[in-house]
Length: 119
Image 1 (tube, rainbow, N blue to C red):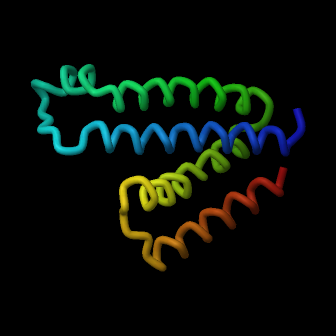
Image 2 (tube, rainbow, N blue to C red):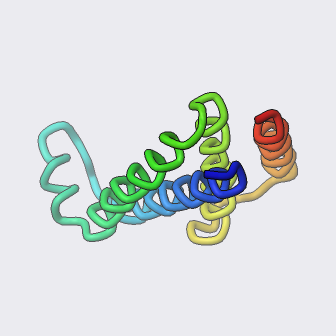
């Protein structure tokens, strides 16, 4: 499998896992959680369950990429999930996207790019 396809597959996995994080946050928003009620809270939240399904799908996609390229390439590309979560949180959760966070996104992107091009 070509490196560009591996990068694309890994980015898809990272995006799906990032959407799952958004669903977890939305599904747990406003709920009181403790050690005694965590399982019930999870099972009663459609968003949390959908997020868990997204994690499972993301793992499958990630494993396909991992089978085709070295871990030292695939895993750093998967770190793009930090970028996706920050951007999606800004859009869906109305979290603040400061210049400092934007600069962090740029640095993460540059690091991923350097590692990807080293293959």
